[in-house]
Image 1 (tube, rainbow, N blue to C red):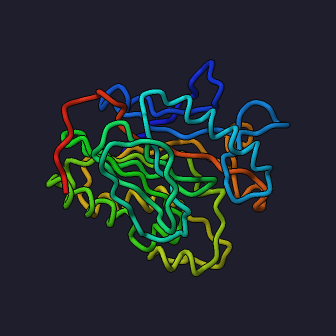
Image 2 (cartoon, rainbow, N blue to C red):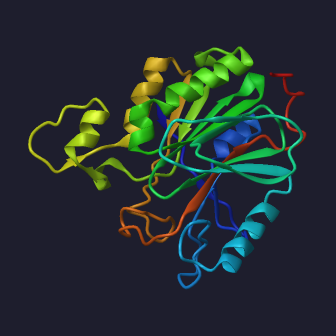
Length: 263
């Protein structure tokens, strides 16, 4: 496991933090939006808050305009579960699904999206197979095995091995800032270690699961949503008042060899 921090893309109408190593090594676009530099008009991409619909949709139009190499995107109403959706076919437009916490595809030009504001965006790629998955991992999803399910879907859909998969745990709340109850510690299979309060590092827990699953390479972001209030939204820090960021992952059109004809 090593660190691979997201870097702020300069001169952007949309505040975007990208994982440079994934673009350089794999031709992938992977990253997360930030809150923006204007405190009076944060770049909130949440769709279920109190912000005016017109303002939210204007930001979404700006977001999609920043991804000229993608012709479609997929998002879902997340439920902190382990349901994943496989997407195939010519992407066109913005599609919103119900009740899922992750997406997979081997189709270039399709941008996978999840909503985050402390939970871990987990980026998975099988570069030799041009297949990717993006997972939303809070403590419930982490405890419920969303990572194992994502790996199982990638391997079954493409024929790759877990050792062919690379993984990045993105911008999320850090362990020292994530105070939880005993039920969370127990659900994650960890010892309480004395009287509370307890802190849980979800990215460390996911890395342990990745090692058990045999994932070939794992990197972790050092950014913390709770500590970096100028850059990122945090549900925990704001006591639920903050906005939402969007993590994204996908192969731009024309990158790499022709994708596999998968079922």
